[in-house]
Amino acid sequence: MEPNIQTSRRGVDVLKSILKADSVEEQFRNALGKSSQAFVASIVSLYNGNTMLQQCDPSQVVKEALKAAVLNLPIDQNLGFAWVIPYNNSVKTPDGRYEKRMTPTFQIGSKGYVQLAMRTGQYRTINADVVYDGELQKVDKLTGEINFQGEKKSDTVIGYFAYIEMINGFSKTLYVTKEQIEAHAKRFSKSYNSKSSPWSSDFDEMAIKTVVKRLLSKFGYLSIEMAGAISNDTESDSMSDRDKAIESSATQIIDIDDVQHEVVQEEVEDPAPY
Image (cartoon, rainbow, N blue to C red):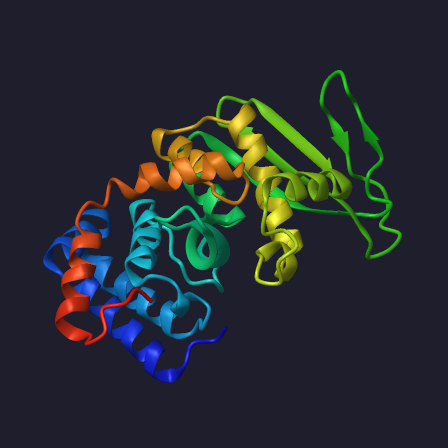
């Protein structure tokens, strides 16, 4: 259900108050330095422009945004590096029941993975794209070499590829069919059939990201930063692994919940959770 204007206003006020807390500002400064203020402003802008995100707990929105800040990836959805996406998840209540609740979730885009990889200084080339009907000529199972020199026959997408070449000369290409990507998404993303899922709004981008992540994690050079990003990629992991990743990452942001509770009691007459 879409929040009313009053509820949205309260959420924005709480979000801004959390972001202004000394402990929270310090965490963003530690992650981003002088650019922290611009990043914080982008969080407010993102929240203001997304009515579904406004149904989420503001403190959780800040937690997810901080994951992007730690990786120095912008959360402007138009850039495609990273997002904070609201999902209508089933959440267990204290009395043992399950109820639907909008939950913000940090996700990295294909550009984000490429950015993290290039920062290592170990990659000469990284490329990924869709493969159209007719372009795939041959896949050599022994060497792993893939020939995409065929002539495009139509705009029908049959698969996706990712390619890396290291500074030391090692190179690798990964090709995954569209059917394999769909099977992967249906298995690992419980939001796959949801209209709010990025799999519904931008399937090709999610598919390319999945192939890039798979290639980097299996054959690429992984910095500690990249390994952490891959392990916390919540869209591609199973739900149980996803919950563990979020819980583990959330422990790094120890003050936000306390700040949020203080703000709610001080600025909002009704302290009920949003």
